[in-house]
Image 1 (tube, one colour):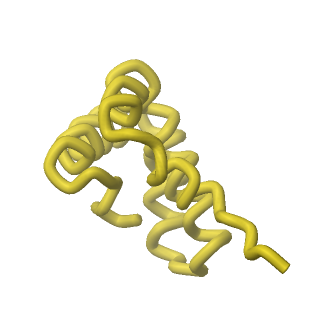
Image 2 (image 1 turned 180 degrees about the vertical axis):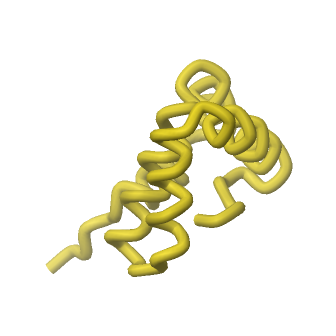
Length: 82
């Protein structure tokens, strides 16, 4: 039986250019949702806390949006608190 890919793995499998474009336009939402989904896939409580803070705080959205955009450009994946 084939193993199902997780949602975060599916996002990470997208081409780099597509992920950068998505981060520019929807990075505020993607950052929080990615971390919450990652929590359910891996179980890291810090990932859940950061994901919720990113979704529900304005300054958290801006900071994580910039950090996620930079990590997508440099490392081709979201790495900080994920």
